[in-house]
Image (cartoon, rainbow, N blue to C red):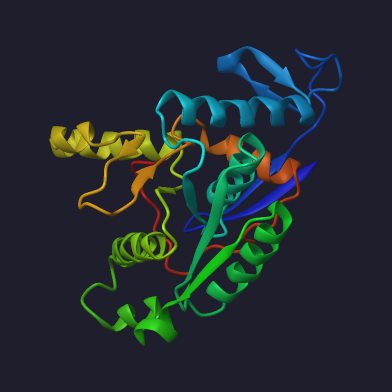
Length: 256
């Protein structure tokens, strides 16, 4: 199985999944090697492993409970796509919403919106779309002519966090789930460490309490999941995902 994934800022990720022996669990042909778990898994057993880990993390950190409404911030990238699908598989009866923000990035945002619409239909969850141009009369592209042109990811992240919180309040969501994975957490932790920001490291938690009363808490069900496994999960399940990198994507040396 050949996988091509458009990774923002650093070109495409190209993987070739081939038979590497017998599955540790069921004896079928294995295509995924997880050295840290000492397991080689077939497609079905890897899916089971992935979904059960998401369920375990949610339950261990009490991210949400039965009857609460969970909003999943979906960008169209592999992490958020894997998150929405796995959450629905792990908690099929949970009241779940998908959120997407069309940032107005030329040739990019509309492409991702179609992917997210297809995904939401596939997993059977309501989709809320916030069009930045229609709602706020500006787009992320507009910042290219401002002093923030070299900090596009920071600008984008700040805008998305605020809008996702607003969207969650509008639908009465108790929690917002984001696709932050293990690699994201470790790279941020290293950056904060070298900057001497130890208080910032202490705030890197699986569950972040709301800053103000009435706001939803923020949860990270993929915080123990390696980034590459999100890509495996999306590819093996043929989920709709971005096919091109963000034109404003920045390469982060610390993550490399």
